[in-house]
Structures are given as C-alpha cells and as structure tokens.
Amino acid sequence: MVKGILKINVVEAKNLKDEDFIGKSDPYVKFILDKNNFLSTTTKNNDLNPKFNEKFIFNVDGHKKIGVQVWDKDSVGHDDLIGEDEIDLSEVISKNYVDAWFDLTKGIFGFRSKGEIHLLMEFVPK
Image (tube, rainbow, N blue to C red; front, side):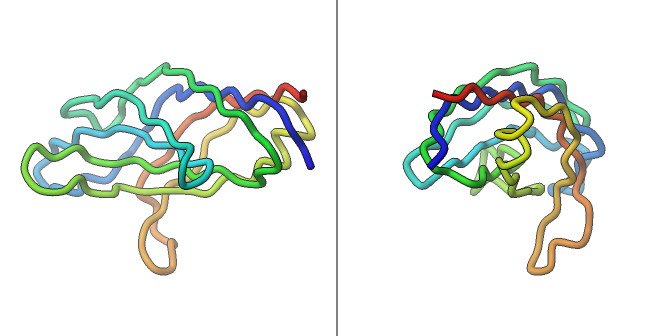
C-alpha cells in the first residue's frame, strides 16, 4: 500500500464549454480523493480559459485515483458540471512528478471534450 503526500498545482483550464450557453461560465475546480477528502479552487468569473495557480495537498494512503471536476458556479439553482476526469495516480507515484493537460469529458460515454485542465502533480512518499 503506497502512502505519501500528493501535491497538486492547478495551473489553468482552457476551451471550457459554456454550460449556461450565454458565454459567462464561472468555473471552479474540485478534486475528490474519496468521499471524505475533497478540495475546491476559488471561482473565476466569466472565464472559459481561467488561470488558477492554486495549490492543494492530499494525504495518499493506498488511493489509486483522484477525480477532478470543473463546475460552473451558479448564483441561482445548482452548479453545473462542465467536465471531469479521473486521474490514475500510478504515473505520479512512479515518476514522482507529472506536468500534463487532462481532457475533461461529461456524459454517459464521456466522449465529447468539455475543455482541458493543466495540472502539476508531485508525489512525496512517506
């Protein structure tokens, strides 16, 4: 069982799809390690190509994946899911560092791109 610290820097997102269809998505990113361990960025107003540059730290204890979701913050009603991905942590754990763009998809088959997110991930074993 692998244990360590996972550091994530959310650099930016690009080409996010406008889920409101008015060109004014207010995106934020949510990371989900498990049902009790999740963190979110701040919201970037009116931006389909937001720069985040926000850092997060997770304690990894046998976790194999982390979910990343990009949401559109709505002031009325529920927030809308723009897109998501599930990141296999094995590459980060084996290389200790990954700098990559991840394709965000949505829907039952997840084929259509809803944009991309740029993450810097570092793993420090315990």
